Image 1 (cartoon, rainbow, N blue to C red):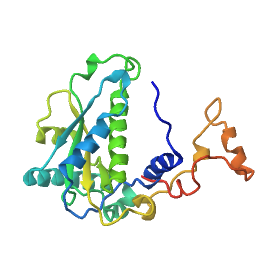
Image 2 (tube, rainbow, N blue to C red):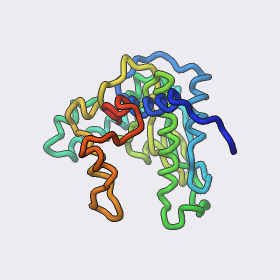
Image 3 (tube, one colour):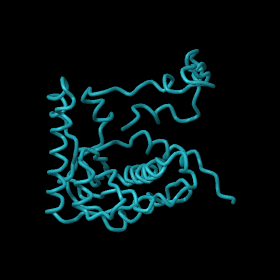
Length: 241
């Protein structure tokens, strides 16, 4: 059960990876070495899962024609999403929302079939399979950033159409297309924040004490100017999506 404690440098590196992780849309081609890709997938597979169900499945897509078809599915949904946004339609269409063709690697993440057999932790919260797979994606994302690689989570697609394209079995469900690879640079801020699509909400507005809506005393020290966090001041400078 014993393990060496994290050093201050270790802790700083973890917080730095979290703060500087970005949802990348701009890729510069290139390749990801097989050994690095295996490390990233191992990091994903080390994620926690409810009832230890490990619901994640990864499909690596290297065929160019398949990528083109997936790109077409994303673009079709992009147009439908823009139409659904009404007044923000034109603004949305100017955003770059995916790097399916430019990224060195493309991974589809799916929830496994037969998930109904896993009751532990899911009897009243069946969506915990999705939560568990999201933990795996976050692990991969942070590991990629530590390796100097960009990753972008694409969710703009018809899941049934992508499932057919990838020959998923009945009951399996695609939740993400992950674009992974070298990037020309990491965004200083989340791209949607840079493009003024949205702004990060203040943390103190999202944390409550005892009941919904009751402001947390955790942030009273910040309000009075006292130090409130043991993490380096620069670690959370811009946050990141």
